[in-house]
Amino acid sequence: MTPPAATVVLLYQRTSLPWIFESAERAGVRLVLVPRPDEEPPPEGLPPAVTEVLPLDVERDRAGALEALRRRHEAEPFDGVLTLYDPLVPFAARAAETLGLPGIGYDTALGAQDKRIMRQRLAAAGLNTPRFVSLDGPGALAEAARLRYPVVVKPARGYSSFGVVRADTPDALGPLAAEVSGYCRERLDDAGSLLVEEYLDGPEYAVESLAHRGRVRVLTIGYKGRPEGPYFEESVYRAPAPLPAAVQEAVRREVTAAHAALGITDGPTHTELRLCDGTPYLLEMGARIGGSGVSHHIVRHVTGVDLAAEALRIAAGLAPESFGPGPSGEAEGLARATGAAGNYIVPCGGSGRIAAVRGLDAVRADPRVDHVVQMLFPGDVVRPYPDFTGYPAFVLSHHGSAADGEEFHRALARDIRIDYAPEEAVR
Ligand code: ADP
Image 1: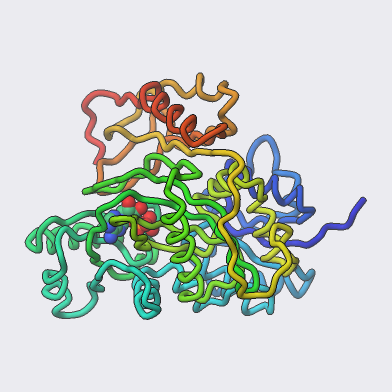
Image 2 (image 1 turned 180 degrees about the vertical axis):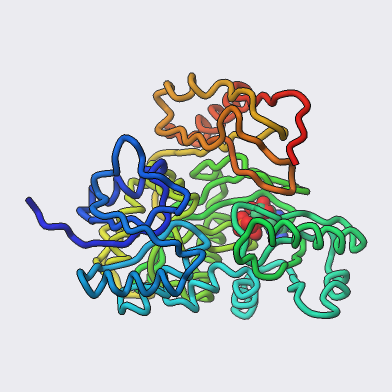
């Protein structure tokens, strides 16, 4: 039996999202899984790569969790700490830093999570960012009134579009900000303060990249639809995006420069941006695999790169296998697309108690579909926006071309539907 290449502590990954577990097996990496406190081990057993389960309530007791990891490392050293869960990216970086393991460091991780810090660092590096105001301090609302409207209000440390709302006039901003603050206090452990930024009017793209020792490979650019608000529900993700070569190159340059501006030298990143008249404006860059592993699915089918395996190797201080030889800092081209892939995010299409989720069974049997992740079921309650309950399901697929993927998504929009039980108060 070959000895494991490395052991990595994986924080808060749901086993229902299988990609990183499968990649760990392929890469010969053993996983110490820290499950989410609300997750029971699956009845069918743990993925084979998981050799140990270490329950820790990281969000409630960070110091205690750090101390437990230190003790575990002392008793039996591991090689790295990784998470795909956005709120824990700074904690994972801090743990790695404290234990002398590879990582980008706490300060850099925070800059890739707290949108105030991110915006400041991107703007200081001369990158394209919308004008913004941090709503913390007297006079901030008055300052935000002077931005160009519409604007978008969002929690500085939010995720999954929770609490992200468009405000069309300065008069609407105050009440909306108060409402979003209330939701954040209720539902986000550490939302930070609110950020207001100018609305970027243009189609949205997600970019998946991998960095190693300062070299950045932009792997895929995918289309994310054109949500216009007032609430920003995700809808589709299709890669590669059919963009002219010059625009792809502008995106690649901007994203590569953003890595340098934020100091992200190692590991996977997930970037969201909008194109305004062909110019990329960064919405955010996360120092992690996007969508709890969805980005891995996209990258694997579009480029053949095993993104999650590469992320595990880099987290453990091993060399990634998808980088060609070359000096650090050398410019990398956009990876070549050899296939197409998509994620269709089933829209809630209303609110209330779910009576039925229609059309998903047929989709599961479709050979183009690799995985259906169902998160909401009959009986679950969907609260109305701007509150956020979660998405009903993801449909992950692969295709011969981006056009086939688009056609497939049109059919899903027709065939999948959520039915709600009549008139029940859900608040
Ligand atoms: P989160 O981290 O919660 O996903 P984002 O900043 O990525 O927050 O915002 C979520 C979504 O809201 C984006 O994907 C985008 O569709 C929309 N959005 C956020 N900020 C802006 C903006 N300045 N202009 C236009 N759309 C925005």
